[in-house]
Amino acid sequence: MVDDFVDAGLLTQLRWRCSELQASGALRPARVGRGANERLVPEVRGDFISWLQQPERDAEHELLSRLDDLRGQLNRALMTGLEDFQGHFAVYPAGAAYARHFDKLQNSDLRAISAALYLNDAWSPEDGGQLRMYLGGGRSEDVIPVGGRLVAFLSERFEHEVLPARRERMSFTGWFRRRSLDGFV
Image 1 (tube, rainbow, N blue to C red):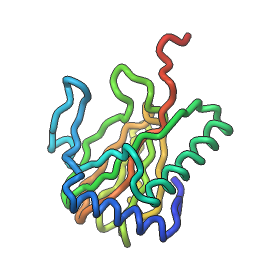
Image 2 (cartoon, rainbow, N blue to C red):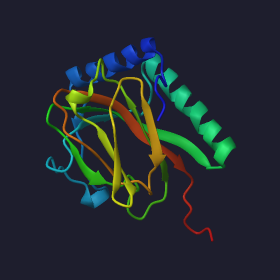
Image 3 (cartoon, one colour):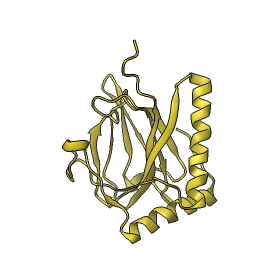
């Protein structure tokens, strides 16, 4: 967990971009599963998302550059073999949540490290919306989604959930991905 991963100016621009996507209807209800098994299940996942395919704003370019710098640092320090980052803007309306889950996709080892950058303004613990991380041994830790805070964790190791918030909750969330390990011994 790193506070102030982005400065206040960039945070404001990213929050504005997320709001712009929401106002334009570009945010769509998030789905669970993939391929033929992909479906809407609002009682499991209640957020609205917009994948960042091609950056359209300077703020998006700057954020992806910061994430790419982090990818390089992780590769050098931990030899993680990360190749890229795939992410989306997300908005959780008041009361929405995302049930306990792993980010590792079934039959895929591409997602190595999950990351969430919170875009919220003036967030307090009373606002809810915490990321609950399950650490094993019956232990968990709640992370408050304070604007500018980046949380990153191993996608296949840590089960987690997003608790309901009392007001709208925004983030840019995604995965550092690696080349498939299928076929390697």
